[in-house]
Length: 273
Image (cartoon, rainbow, N blue to C red; front, side, top):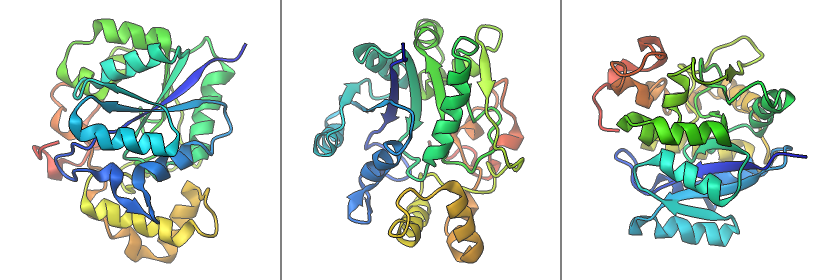
């Protein structure tokens, strides 16, 4: 019997650096709509659900979900772990695939590759990602969690960073969970040099330009297609190059065991997340 795989897209309007980023326009649709479109290109059968908050500011996301005919769940604004767990229970998930809404350039083939790795040995892992260590360009983030693993994490995690970021308790406690990681088959590591995610206005300009360049000829453009574009037009790479490697790790290095300084951009340390 197949497993019920639920892809959880966490989205909210609140953002200290770029408020309302998920509703910014990309080729006449919202960034969130483009994100969902790419998730629906994967081959593995799965249900996509938007996980937003109960805050009134996020009513617009609920309306967008209705317009896209995508189910949604509204939960705690800041406790993302609880939001994921309650959504997974509501949709009777066997497996939860966590995708942040700031990854509108995510390659569907990368998702299928990580899912394939997990599903090829369904009893071998509690958690599989392509992030520990990360190798693909930032913005191809895939995390797969069994329901049992998510429930144990929900019961045991207590630190603010564990509640806000959903999965740190898992990969910070490798003795408690069976953990797997999928590295980029190229042997390259672009996780700190190439930024396909969105937190800043410059990121939006980058993502918008990539869609404008590639979407019309190939709506399901790949990570390789983006990299080839950047080689042809390096000025696009430069749009947000100064933020390469910026991630939430930078302000929590003293709390994390399995993440070091080489996995984040310290130039932006102490910036409000």
